[in-house]
Image (cartoon, rainbow, N blue to C red):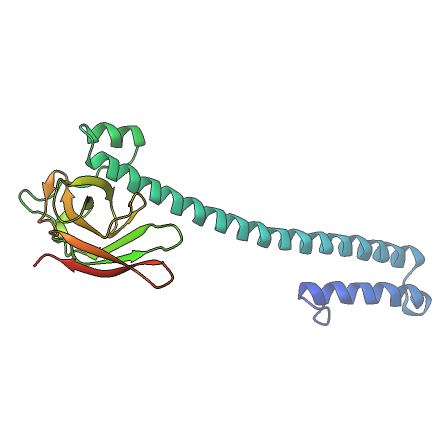
Length: 225
């Protein structure tokens, strides 16, 4: 291609269309025949159509890539969440191997014998005044050999009586959606890993108060010494 003919696609399309018109106008004075300028004009028209089709396909590809990237991210997040649920379920199952085999996901590595998870600490409670749900959060320093730790959450109304297990979670938070009206409730959180239990958090007392407008709020959260 001659050096004066643009090489960039958009510039080339513009150059060809401009020269198709000019050469057809001045064909007799520039040495081109009617058939030659006609062929060049037809080629310019077809190239322009192909260029527009290319631009449309390029934009469609960009849009499709964005859709695919979002879909892949959402699906990966859901798959990861389901895997955590399956692992949590397997940790309390009588036959965890069957659970992992049926789910076709790898079982967590067995912990080092005798190494227990850490003890939950720094428990906090936040009440959703709209739904009445109580969200618990906590910290737990687990040894490196206890990856895959899950947490058992127990509750009792008041400060005495039998504990009842209300949930199991693989993350350091739990939302109690079954809380009934009571001035005080206690929670106890225990970390476990493949049948090895850590030291329980000890009773965590959550007390509730009433604002002047009647709204219930968490008045205090105290952990056992």
